[in-house]
Picture 1 (cartoon, rainbow, N blue to C red):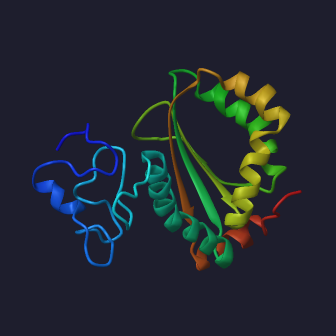
Picture 2: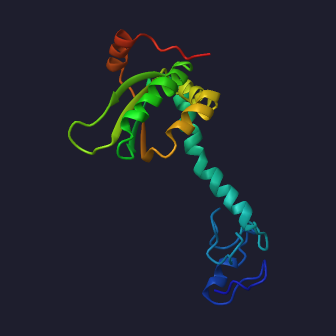
Picture 3: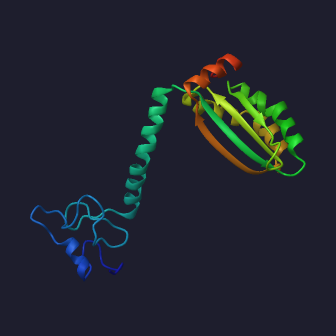
Length: 199
């Protein structure tokens, strides 16, 4: 099939059948999706000779793919049942672990706590990879998570003090956002207190 066929004109060969008009005016072989005979950069959409530009096709595909994510985010905000835990694993340059932890204790921890984010755990390996820190931050729910993360990242202490201080220390980052279970959330609240969503 040639990409040089003019718009609305069926390419030659077997693919031409995809442009054969049916009695109802739709393109033969079309069921609302991409017609088999549509040349590069267009899509048959219901009437012979009607096409959609590639940009519109990409937009439609983006919206189609985004719908499940939007629905999922809406469901999280609607339920807001469990606490959210953000686990982060950082591999640091050799010899920088102590300096990095000091920067977190003096700057990053207070900045996060000002937004109601609780430090649920901080670990360094005893056996396993060296120069690694594992930290877990607790949020009240997804609404708190969505509000607090941009807030602490825009805090001047974060951008002007913490980031310059730890620049070059972090070699690799991994993160995982996890849902808490009901029985663990209750124990967390007893041990650390209820999480305040911050200002």
